[in-house]
Image 1: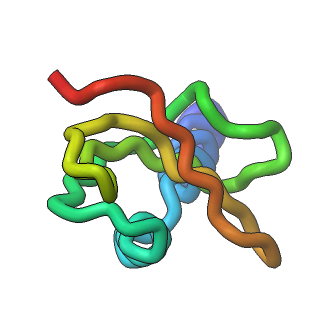
Image 2: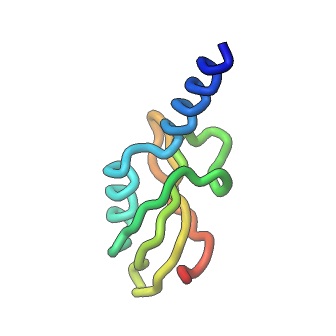
Length: 86
C-alpha cells in the first residue's frame, strides 16, 4: 500500500511540469530565446495552475533571466521572471 502511495505521488508531481513543448512554445511566444528548461518549480505559480516549469532564457531586450512558466488546463500561460540568470 505504501509503495502505491509513493508511486501515485511521484506521478502527480511528474505531471506538474507540463510538456517541454508547451513551455518552450509559451516562452517563444513572449519573445524569449536560448531557452533552457528546468524541472518542476515549487513556488512562483498560482494554486490554480497545474503546470509549473522553471526556465532560464534570454528575454526580448537581450538580458539573461530565470523564471517560471505557469499554466493549466483550458487556460493560457503566464511567464514570471524571478531574477537575473547567474
